[in-house]
Image 1 (tube, rainbow, N blue to C red):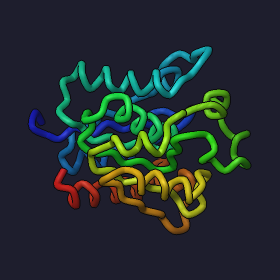
Image 2: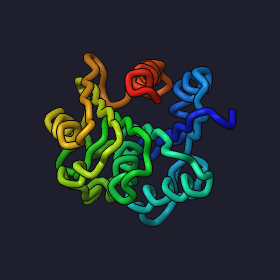
Image 3: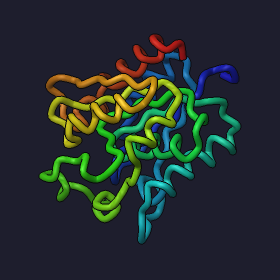
Amino acid sequence: REHAKPVILLHGNGGEHDHLSVMVDQLDSAGYLVYALDSRGQGANAPLEEYHYVDMAEDVYALIQELDLEKPALFGWSDGGNIALQMEVLHPGTAGAIITTGANIFPEGVETSFWAEFSLVKMMLYEPQMTFEDMHNIQCPALIVAGEHDLIDSAHTRAVAENIPHGKLLLLLGEDHGSHVYKSPKMGEVILDYFKEIGY
């Protein structure tokens, strides 16, 4: 597998890598080298007093450096998508491609009725703090996905995609924030189709 293309998978808020188990199998079967992480303070990692997207983004960057990965593709669901975008904003040119679903670049992008559902709420109330101008610096291909009934405002999702120079928007009809991701094959199929499209 030494020539397999690397793909880093980032789970959602309060989640763990096993939530993406179906996608791991799909990408592995398609010949990609898959790294499914537990974000700091989540999954197999001990809980933290404080959580910050920038810290988690730096963790991903450190992993890429440590493993000497050459322009890996990053997939992130929800918080994982925020982290993928934040990593590339902090370290432009690191990612070969980015795919997010249900991501937001500032708190106002989230539909307010959903706040109570999440464990790492304090971070989500104030972070992330990226801007649409930051999105202009993401030069790799980026597929920005959301469910039709996502907790991320569809206008926010559209604006993120439109502000990334090689960004593409995909809204999945009938899906919510996680129905197409959590132990589902749908998002994996979307990713594989997108990789074909961009030649990754």
